[in-house]
Image (cartoon, rainbow, N blue to C red):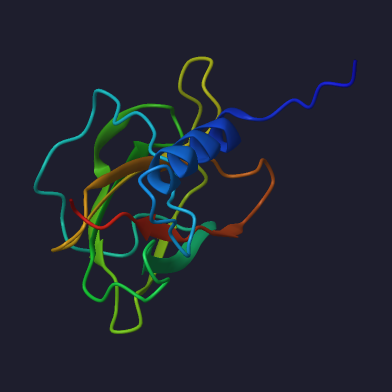
Length: 154
C-alpha cells in the first residue's frame, strides 16, 4: 500500500477547505490554515513594521471568496527574541496597504522548547472572521512570502 504523508499545515488546510466547500460555496482562494494562538498574545502592540533585522516576511492579505486584496487589514505579530524568550520588544502591529500588501522585518525567530522557529500572527478586518495562524520560517532563510487569506464572516 502506498500512503501519502501530509504535513500538519497541509492537513489543516485540507480540513478547512473541506469545511468551507462543504457549505456549497467553494472559495476561489484557499484560506490560510489557522494555528494555535499560544499563551503570549497581548493586545496593544506598537504600530511598526520592523523589530529587528535579518528576516523579511511579506505577502498579501486576500479574501478567500474572490482573492481580492483586503485593504487596511490589521496584522499583529509576536515572537521570541534570539534568546528564545517572548517579550514586548518582539511584538508589532502593522496594516495591509491599499493593495492588501504587508511587510514585516525581524530577526530569525529564536528557539522555543522543542517547537520549530515560528512567528505568531493575528489578522482582523471588517467583514471577515479573525485569523490566528503561525508562520514557520525555513532554517537558513532570510525572507518568505506568506499570504494571509481570510474567510468572510458568516
